[in-house]
Amino acid sequence: MKFNLPIVALGALLLCTSAAPAVAQAPTQVSVSSDDATASVKTIIDQSIVVFKDQQISAPDREKKLRGIAESHFDFAEMSKSAIGYHWKTLTPAQQTEFVQLFTTFIEDAYLSRIESYSVEKINQQIQSSMIQFIKQTSEGPDYATVYSTVVLQDRKNPIAVNYLMRDDGSEWKIYDITIDAISVIANYRNQFNRVLNNDGYDKLVSLLRQKIQGLQQQATN
Image (spheres, rainbow, N blue to C red):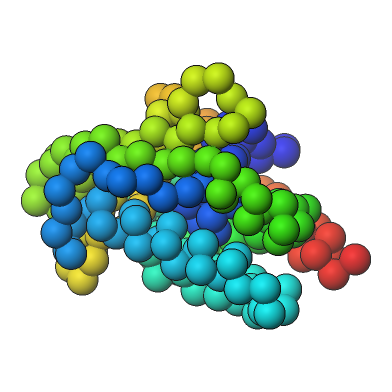
């Protein structure tokens, strides 16, 4: 099991978790307050770009800062629950806690390993040549919202529609899913995880995730 994402989805998630290649700020078309969902997304991107513009930071420190940004602004518990889907209710509380920890580590390791394949100079060049524009924000109840944006990349003719699904956890708005041209990042994982859960059960899924994490961490040290 490869746990693959579409290439465009991968790029968009990189964009959110760590200002991966192809992010730049553009004047937003929506008015936002300091505590709304759009402002939260902009904060993640701002903080990440600052990390990459710091030419003096070491690679380990950059990774540590990027993990901190992700853990502060992504709702990994909600992401994990959604990635499991209807199987979530069949897990014990201990299994739910275990899966959240594993899925969080897997997501961080997977995308941070991709970032390391780019040079900081190349990332900064692409930050300058690309643009993200916020279009609107909609509410799906008191605790849920969607932030709509487009990403213009220098090497793509048409803008990419990138939408952020947000949940207010009581202290701030956090991302729990991203859609790229209507493709959900978490739904992609859910489809793959459900196949394993239906065929082989929870223990097999955990084993596969541990193998993937181990492989990513070994790759990072080579």
